[in-house]
Length: 533
Image (tube, rainbow, N blue to C red; front, side, top):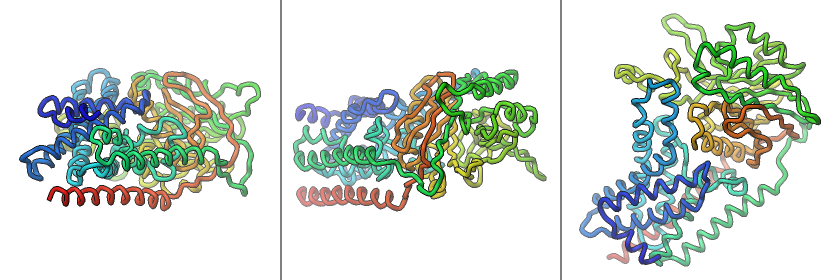
């Protein structure tokens, strides 16, 4: 290990750059559908040794070291994001060749931009770099800060945060309930970097002990929480509640074809009308995916009547729709990516609009500029979608509340507000058919699944082409349909469950970890400077 570390530390020029890109790309193997966590250990071990090379470069001042560290982090991030997000280009090919010219921007341009955050992380880590395990703490703190910024700046894009790579199974997911995805990321970077100490030996014993303690806490809390009873509301009715998720698996190009609208609608109705399997209860609610109704439902009374014909007494349909709001003086019609709750009379009894829209997909930031150079939305909607002003919970006839997250919103932990404590379920409608059978739908599913763990509520997830599932508050999949499967699943939940979501406690736990790692990094850096002097 020491000889290998020395060779990596002394690399320079093209070979060094290539190894940094390779290290980042290798780390993406820890993400779904591969979930090969060991890849991140190799990835961050190489990054630490490469950072050692920046810190020990002779004849460079602080600006030179900052520049070298930033470039190194950018190369690492570029490899990570290209390998983890290349599938985004698939969305540009759905509508023929209209957006094919933008493939390089999706496959390489977005990763090049996102890599700036990792460049910032390594630059900040370089300022706190020292010997021993302190430099691992510096890297952990800096990556945590970079992931936080990535989640909020320019509307945010926290997809594939490092922490997701160490949570492939429920026992490894529960830490997110206690410290959030950022807390998991910080601890993960420290642990993942620990093998680097075997190559340099300095601080090995202390670093390994801390890493083992963090790993034991990660698995220990997972074991503890999985063996705790799920919290329920003793005052509420414990009547079982049955959910049917419809997954039509309709090709996205077909969904966008106006000639196919009626056929697409009828396919949803057909899957909804199947009787339950022997021994199973009739569904209380039937859930369709995002934008499953391929026309404006409020302008098609026959469609509402058809829904009423399919629903049995007391059943409710939850469907993803496009909602139109009439034009006002001097303003065009506004369109919303929405959810409707429709009762057995064909009446719309609840609605919720998407609050956090997808840039370049549902709306164009700085639209006038992009239009002037001939760039429009991927979704062909006049003027794009309009963001909802508030997130409205959906109330069912029996009084249960659904906390809605539409598609992309499920990747943002901060989209969860205290209103979730009123809800009985988290509802996530999505349409991942845009991305085909690539890693994208599997990555999206993991991030959505973590929202169930964080909130302590069951998650109902309906996706056009998959992955659809009903997930309990521990992240266990109760029933589901894999990508590309056409059909439906019914699942009965007892309860009612109540959320134990508490942002105050979780934030306090996170800050305790963050400050501890920061102090380790600062104290190690001060000791290192004293030693140099």
